[in-house]
Image (cartoon, rainbow, N blue to C red; front, top):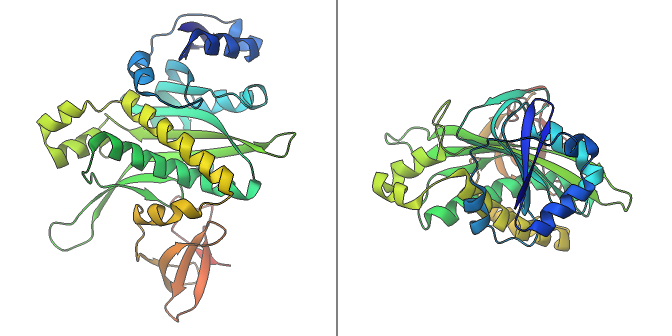
Length: 320
């Protein structure tokens, strides 16, 4: 079921798993959206998406658009309105997507780009949301391809990479295929509403590679076509997993149940890094506060914090 809306020059379409969800969202959306009802021509196949979606709430009501400056800029101002509801904005193309700090990303066709809201009970768990999102996306890819290692990995704190094993005994090739950004606001009851923004190269092979290309490289063209890799299937499988994982993290008030799997799926296993003071260390895992745990060459265990002015979060690390 659907109704259509436009915001500024971007035309949006509101869709839900059933009519009650659409009607309920329409009642709480601000007039700026409802007063600008118009057509939308997004290529996102909502029927395919909803057929695969099995969540209780997350991802059940979506906005789609063919092009927008930033999905994050639309969802963030709606937080106070949509708190306790689930709303996702999915764009075919994004022209001023939000990155870490002041970074801006131009996202082409074939990329899965969206922002959605979710709730976190305790403020100290906020840094772990981006880790959980990355791990849920890895699980989603694995759910689609089965018992095949496509090389998808997480890079601390908020990126997705393909890790291609070296064929000549050198370093593995690392290609970025996705990024995650999270912002949060405290609610009146002391909990936190989080806006998660995400972009994943699903079908677009440039500027690096795509998930479809990497899956085809591993399983072959015929099997890849049989798997029908799409933005819709990947997003549905992501929400199916992330909803359960977020509920568990909130219930346990801990990332401990996911930490081992997270560090098994990251690109930093035994990685050597040079710190801002010139010393070197080996990454050993996550610290109790969610930063990087490392061992200095002198044998001292330390917690590493990033230099937020650096484009690469692993450059200029400092001990605390």
